[in-house]
Length: 326
Length: 281
Image (cartoon, one colour):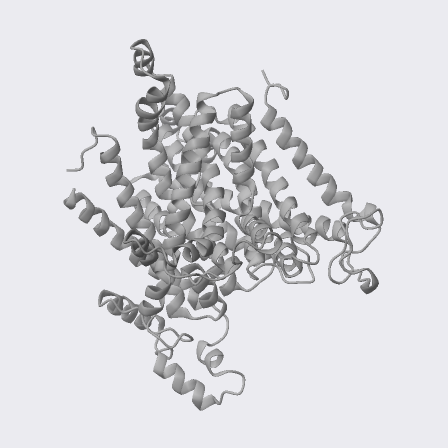
């Protein structure tokens, strides 16, 4: 399994090299001189020249790209033009908040998606099935940012129950303290993360519920389910143990892809709720033409996506013991 | 046997799309207002008999602005999907038919594009090219083409060794003829389904970019921009963003239902479903 994981990560290398090249090429098209943008409108010609030299912008593109690859091998993504700190540090500070939201949203979508999907499949053709699938169809069609605004209008403006923007105390340490018997700021952390995570999670749940339903319908028609029924097993056991476990294989593979969508969706959600994560950083970097930061953020998103897909492959073996990675 | 009654999704989706098309064509005519006609005495009016969907912060008629905005959103969505289809289908046919290093190289490029979150890629391209309808269309096409390339490649791979292709080769048909006359008709079904669903995704993506301030610039009204702008008046005039959000959702719902319904007729084996990019915005 370790060899498999290592091989998958090595296979990511050429893709990472390509992603850096594509992002670099797009950045070459950016209008305006970053040095001039950095110094503002009153910049002198000498000042712009000095900054261009300091940032290496006076070098030909192939030298800049080569230097970037070389630095990357040493874990150096350069220095952000506007944040006045190394890109690695800027990303490090924003990565945890984004992962927090993405993971909570994934949990929400898994729970709701499976419940709606299983209920719809078991009650196929009834009004309950129609309701669940209407929920799914609306969820798939609803823009994530509008759903976020609706939640904000309801819970922050009308009911005044939840804070509309910002991040509370970090969730994981708060959870750790709560487990040690000191719930203190866990409530505050949960109140802050509730709306961004629900926004991302519910739209994602719609996709998962459609998939769970179709996978469940497939497995519920199998011979081993008829055998289980003939043996007189409880219907709940048949659905949850015999059918759902087999249906989960398809679902898990999609969840890997959905995690990528969640990371991408974070760009919009974080902008709505002022959540200080990677998505917000990406929008700011692109707005400010902060080239090293844009390259760093894109590469981080891609690496996270690749890692999650390796994890998903490993999860297959846990769910289906017939799968072995040599 | 085709029957509209037998396929509720197709009928419902078709009705929604037809209604939107009528709204786009005749909406501004029936309202009697121009989309940029200001009336500061009637700012932020609730929907009424005079202004059917109310007015915005400058007293402009929201019905008219939504109809004109629909035109912009539709043009961008349909054009970006059309470009993505042409590029993706051509690349997929070449990749699947020639195989070997051509296939390997093309699929690695596809992997690179799939590795970048779609909205981040689109944002970066729009930032590089600048705002505007054409650039927004190109940036979305650059995100979407990979889906079509993957689907068409997989179908081409399964048809490459078929007897009818061997017969065409034996008859001396050119490579272009084999690709575009012999194999292409086999991929049309899944591609049409994918493209119909893709228009819905493109509408959401376009409005998302406009929402972040990277879309078509004012005074051209787009749905995403109206939604974003409406959030500033969430307390005083919540209907501003609600109307824009509902318009986007209903339109996307229409294309999704229509695409789902089409699938039953054009893609019964579910090729498009297996390859639909699930990491959409």
